[in-house]
Amino acid sequence: MNFVIACLFVATATALSPVIKNECSRPIFKFRGLELSTGTTIVRETVMKVDYEVSKTLKADDSAILNLKIAKAGWVVWLPIPSLIFSVAVSNMQLPPGIEHISGTQFKIDCRASKRFMPVCPPEQGSNIINYDFTYIFDTIKEKAKLGGPFATVLKWFASVS
Image (cartoon, rainbow, N blue to C red; front, side, top):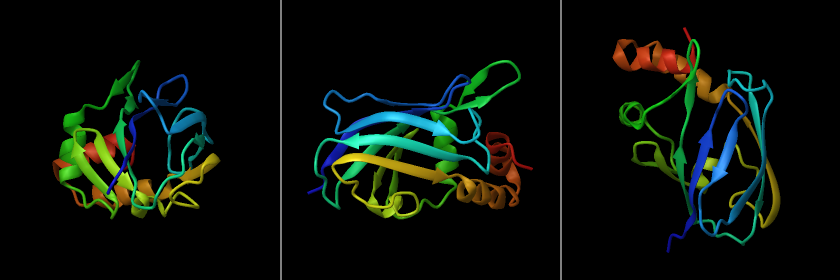
């Protein structure tokens, strides 16, 4: 039986500092820190370090529901990316095994998806650190952007690639 871990996590990139906020009433994950190697901007060379603690032993078939909130730098302010843009983008993408789009900015993720960025899945009870390299995402976006069309235009704007 699939146990849903942690209710909702909210990952937000802001102009001042990136934040991961846990909005659960009884969280299994406690996020202690988030650092970007490039300051507050995510670019191809960015490595994101997430420091977190797991309070319960998890099973390999457990999954997490993630609700992402992401903002794109504008001329003067940060612009939140609406869930409609995510829905359109996801409908034009092939998600890797282990990631299921629920709706808008909400995704269900299991251990199959985490192989690229987690050394052990499920994470062990206690202290854990993930170092995620954004190279793969940016290279994939750049390839998709080469296909042209309205979807490619949105991807180019979102990821600031040409």
